[in-house]
Image (cartoon, rainbow, N blue to C red):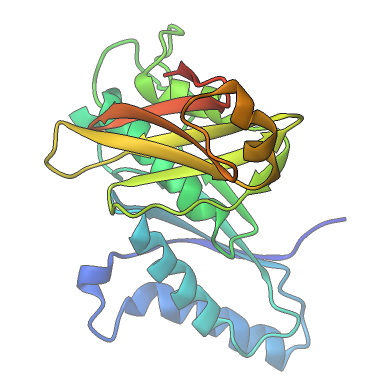
Length: 242
């Protein structure tokens, strides 16, 4: 089948939102008006968004949902470009981008988006120029590549995760008799944070005899997580990849 929709607009930032972003909103609301007037389908709406603050993406998604409120059925929401910055920046070659990507993947997984596309897989350069890719043109990988590599290992049933720190988050899955947890520390001012992972429920019960940190209903694992870092923890073994 062929999806009909668009346009791939460039979304503005929340700090510019003073009864705006006018241009993007007008494009989309005019598309809605025209499609309704001519009984045409709109299968999707797509846009690009670049922002170092993951929570701002939720603002952008909600804006688009409001602009599309008159359409039924609701079009698919496609974020067809996202990254830390729309312009080249030195952070894009560093661990900052890697931790940002982990925070973004957590945010987007919990959002109402149908699809999101990271920009871009490969740089057009063989130099360290702060461009957007996960690797340079010559195949040399950047720290952000490892975030996506670790993310690809999260196979299985997704589990609920709660964090009590604004700069720390996680994604967790159950696979067989163990849990894999992708933990990230993005931003803030502390060089490292002490992290305690706790697993409650039947999995913890089954492992309580195997680890001194376990109780009858909870298994815990404690470690330090440096700023702008990502780790994949396998519980209950406590094995770490980063």
